[in-house]
Length: 68
Image 1 (cartoon, rainbow, N blue to C red):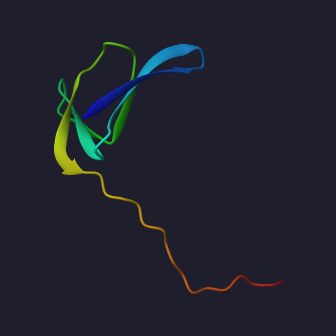
Image 2: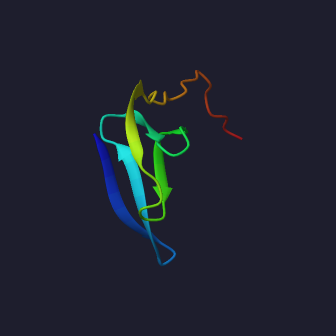
């Protein structure tokens, strides 16, 4: 489901839009896909896509820290 939160950045009221199901959102006016969007209020509308946002994986290395 698409969620919206009102946020304030540098004294400006903005709207953060995202999916609570970890799906991309599509901006209806442009067709552009986002993981989340921050806009001025009432500027754009969004639809939740069927595509999951990939989870970031931590990079694992076998390197040992050097003691210099």
